[in-house]
Length: 144
Figure 1 (tube, rainbow, N blue to C red):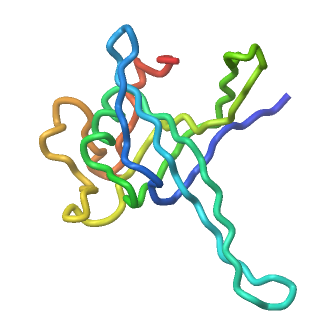
Figure 2 (cartoon, rainbow, N blue to C red; figure 1 turned 30 degrees about the horizontal axis):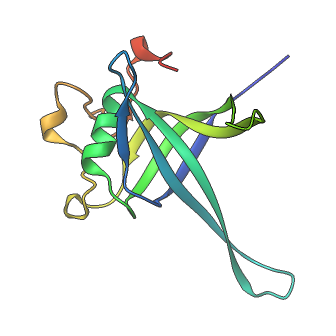
């Protein structure tokens, strides 16, 4: 059976990133991302539809996102959909679909808090010189 799980999103952050660390010391940040589309309805009136998503970023990418992004920052994300399941305090099974970031690119100018190339991150996550993407380290692909 053929299968493909890949998403490309451009949107703006709905809140400031908040970093946390796993017991093993791996950084993780959840980003609230608003993605919108404009269209004309059947009466030719301009409408806007907004989708709010959670993007999960791991490792050095998470640290860079926490350092350079803020509420309202424009962001381009490449990733995959993941299903997270848990049981709430009442014993009810809950689940949510999130986007697991594989690559992140900051959009906008550096004076808006989202530089395209964080110079002091050269030892951790450095944007690809050709694309400007922050890429997930291949050896760390299974943090969750």
